[in-house]
Structure formats: structure tokens, C-alpha cells
Length: 139
Image (cartoon, rainbow, N blue to C red; front, side, top):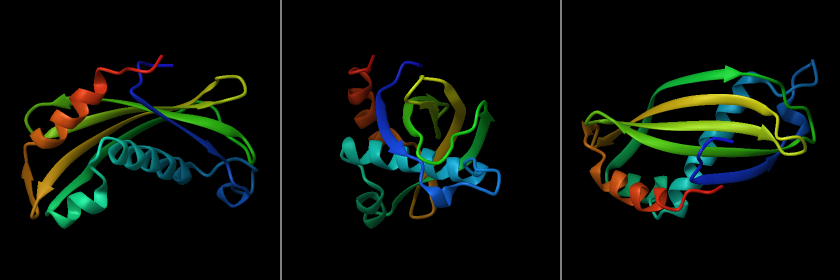
């Protein structure tokens, strides 16, 4: 697994699978988003609180490489790390692994910009919180 600063264990639910019996490709974006939300809550910057203050991190771009499918009942680990790119962008590097055999299911690069009252701003307040957390990299 990549250098990770946060991980979340989840389980595939029946209704997330398509007719082929595998997780629908769009559902993986929900898994990735839920992991980012839980991470931000864990560092004290949940979306609800930020939004109340006029701050909104929004997805600018997502790149996903699907490697293997998950099936109903699979337990998986969603992990992330982040980096700052330029003045305005944060990149969340995320991966999902099946727990039983640690098989890599997907890799994603999620580029986020922060808006304050609808206008792009430097994500300094968020980067400071994240950098403190980054020092405690999970193994």
C-alpha cells in the first residue's frame, strides 16, 4: 500500500453491484468521496463546518485506474495521502485494496480546489491542518 495518512474500512453492499455482480464503476467515486470526507472530519475540517464559513473544497478533476472489481460482501480498505500542487490545488492520491488478499482494486488522483464564497482561494488553512496530520503516516 502507498504511503498513507488515513485509511477507512468499508464493505460492499448488494445494491452497489450491477447485473454482472461487481461494483458499478460510479460507486467507487462514492467510496473515494466518503474516505475524503471522513479524513477531513478526523482533522477537524468537516464539510458542513467549512460550508457554514463560506469554504467549499470542490473536485476539479478525478483520474481513476480500475485494476480489479469488488463484489458484494467484499471488505475493502480505502486509503489516501495528499499533496499540494501550485497555489490553488490539493491532490488526494487514493487507493482501494481488497482486505482479504490486499489486492489493489483501484488508484485515483483527485484534484480539489477550495472556494471561499464561490471564488478560488489558496487552501492554506486546510493545508496547515493536513500537514500536521501528514507527519503521522500510517504503515
